[in-house]
Amino acid sequence: MRRTRLRQVSPRRAASTDGPLWSTLTRTPFQPSAVAGVQATRPPLRQVSEKRAAENRQRAALLARLRAERPSCEARFAFADVTCCGPLDGHEPLTRARGGSVLDPDNIRMICRAHHDYIHEHPALATALGWLRPSGGGAR
Image 1 (cartoon, rainbow, N blue to C red):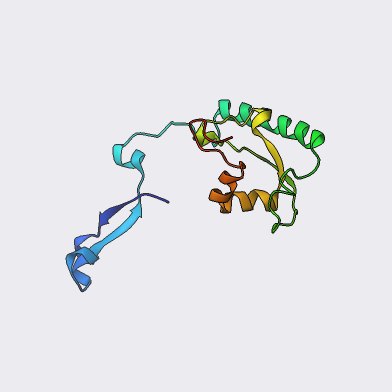
Image 2: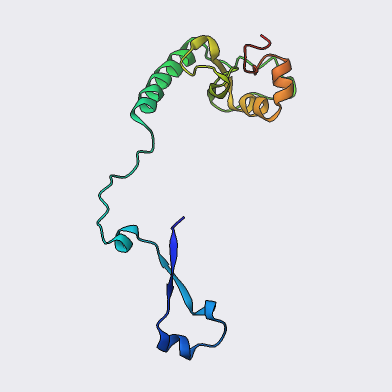
C-alpha cells in the first residue's frame, strides 16, 4: 500500500470548484525524500534474512532425505475419512510457534497434503490423536 499525503489545490483552482474546502484537497504519492529534500539511500529490505535462508536450505535437504526414507503418508491410517492425495509435506507436531524445531527429524512426520490440511483444520482432534502437540511439553 502506498503512503499518500494531502496536497492543497491552488487558490485559483479552488475558487472554480464547488463544495466544501476539503474537496479542494487531492492525494499525491508520499515521498519522504521530496518532503525532506534528501535523497533516500537505503537498500531494499530482504524478503528472508540470511539466517532464515540458511535454515530453509537445511530444511529442504532434511525433507528430501526424509521423503526417501519415508515414501508414504504416515497419517494414512489415523484418519479414516480422509483419502491420501497430493505430495508429501513435512508436518511438525510441535510447531515452531510452540517451541519446536523445523530441523529436528524426530519432530517431522511425512504426510500427504490432504492429511496435512485436515490436521490443521481440526486441531482439537489432531491434538487428541497426537498429531499436534501443545507448547510446554504437553501430551505425547
